[in-house]
Length: 178
Image (cartoon, rainbow, N blue to C red; front, side, top):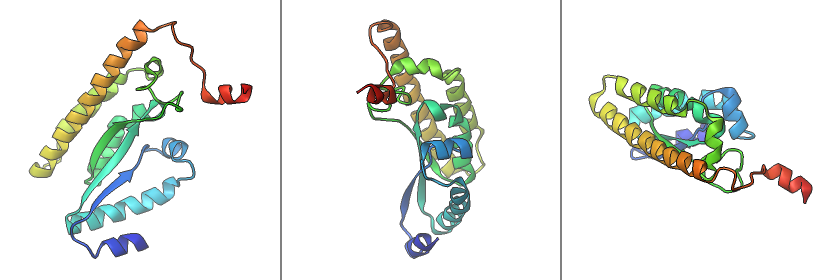
């Protein structure tokens, strides 16, 4: 709240909020040490000030195995608070159980991944009535979701081609044996 009060003095502010889960379980699993309750208190305050001041706020949702199913709900959450949303692939080779972009064989751990992306596109098209903001929101979501679909489709093909050729060990198992 104190940081928001200081920022509220400025008219031209851009905020990027890292929110990788829109349920308590997912948010606190990914954002270790994060508090879902604090997030629920803070986000409406940010939204209110941002709308009053004309700020640009983007919710950055880093896509991984454990939160993929929340993509449609994340889109609705962002729209509710009038935030734009970015769906970015998780990065990092050490994330051997989460990074389905680096380890495409993990795609099999996300049942109905295409359905989640289709639902996000359908929700983006449903609109809010604010034509300029909504048009930008829809186009942004369409581009981001199609980018994810292209990455995962290519990864799925790569996983089929390399099936049985690469050994997969979770990082914690490798560290225990060292």
